[in-house]
Length: 576
Image 1 (cartoon, rainbow, N blue to C red):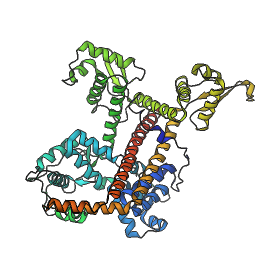
Image 2 (cartoon, one colour; image 1 turned 90 degrees about the horizontal axis):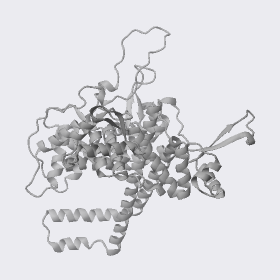
Image 3 (cartoon, helix red, strand yellow; image 1 turned 90 degrees about the vertical axis):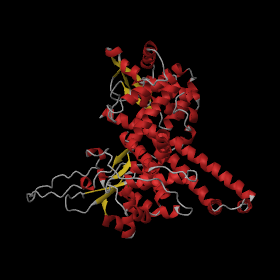
Image 4 (spheres, rainbow, N blue to C red; image 1 turned 135 degrees about the horizontal axis):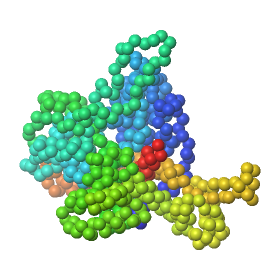
């Protein structure tokens, strides 16, 4: 029915615990469920190794701690703790601030559950950059995600070398082409400067203190790159030349950070000390807009979605990320900004806008009549309706169409007695009762008591069934976290089971690449290929097929996670 109703809802149908992970640091630690902690640990282990996973999960469960406390409680040598903290901070998964006792106290480190869970969305960031800015944009985002933050000159050189390496012999790409794409990414705010360290740790106050007086509160909140004026200012970099083709076998050497640093430090380019990172919030806004556009195209047609796309593009700069709707736009402005290939007349545009306003999904709203009519895109209402469609889809897949009918009815009517549910849903009393109790046992439907008298006598009490959409969305979000963790566990298990075969395949592929680069004869290549037997090839093909299916399932569940988290966050902002 909608773009996001087609995600694999059967994957999500697992009962989970709502248990919260305890924290000794009170409000300073992020509220985190057991499923989130498990998923964060799996992501840290897969991308950074077991030591970083141990330190990261320890910080997630314990809250903000100083270095000595981390070493003592985790039982890890101090040098490994320092290296793990450096890795986490470089990728934005950990932040440091002045201790709770104020200036002069040891610096404390705190892991970010939200940022660690964002690792799951890395493939989507890279694919979006490729779609918007071709292969060059894809490699820029990929390098930054892999290394956390880099200088512009380092990124340009590395990306140019990779692009040249994949080109035909004798061809190369100029640094200026990569610089142009980098500037476009900064201009559209997909990249931003890292905040200066001096702004991360406030300076120690020199004001005299009164004996016995409580210490002044110190702001230890995480800094935002937008807090300084040069966040999106591209430095003037002196780069001239073209990408260099690497010889076979150099890739492993170039992946070592010390070697790369030694290479880049030989000459200066004018951007030393200016580091860049991916602006995840900007990508999330793009994902949100694309979700709404896809839903409009699925519900109505392509022209309607293009009108909504135009309205979202026009209000990108003027609408704040936390707004419930875009800035109002006149029909005249929308008509002038439509793409040239959509040659629709002004009366047809008015008809489409009227259709969008009258649609029950309320993607577009009308706020005035000046300029041919003032229109906004209802961001919060769109996310609410898309989240509702996702919940209905999950209920239908797990409990059947009749239970989904009851669930949908309660969402629309808010509160209904059992007899009303039977009549409106046109389901026999016995079946309706069984379905309601099944939905109640899964915490999808709630029973609310309205007593007529203070004694709460059953004969004088109304029993109304209802659905709390926000609480149900939060519960489904936990289902999604558990599902992704199970998928990662399964993928790691299958990879471990076939580790020997995978290593053999990689060695043979490396030998093949080396022989092809040296101009070997076809007989030699065939001989190397035959080192893998037919059963082993079949096993490898089956393994790759299963891994691809698991990766695809992870991406599909992540789309549901993003939609539900966007809805929960938007509702929290509205109700504040």
